[in-house]
Image (cartoon, rainbow, N blue to C red; front, side, top):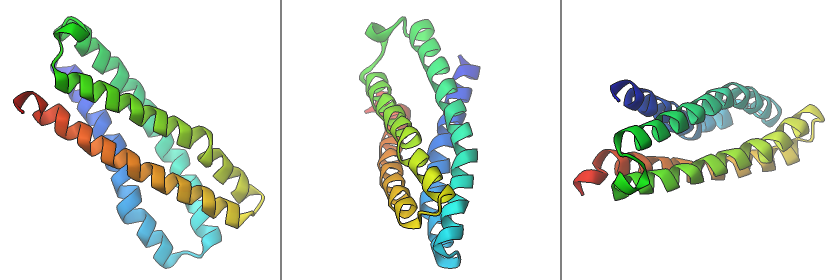
Length: 151
């Protein structure tokens, strides 16, 4: 159980922490120092690398989460409300991420390749808003997961 929870938590930290860094630190710095074509290319390269980490984090979160759910709690019936909330909110985060990956991110990559910078900027703005949503959900999940059974 201790290895599973450690892997589960580290995976969540990589995903949520990476989003917070990108949204609150990298984005404003890139806006301040890079012209739009370079800034958009930077984001394509950042996402290309970060999304590999996110896919891995999602896989590890799901594997360890379900393993703990069924081996420690005996399934959903034995889990507290905080586990149910974490489970549902986590799946919402996965669906938001999958939408980002398969729609605006792909459109961003294509727009940068063909140098359609207004379209690329619009897609980056869509991603920014969805990442902001996932940060809020992710922070809520962390609070519920860590303090939920005590509330």
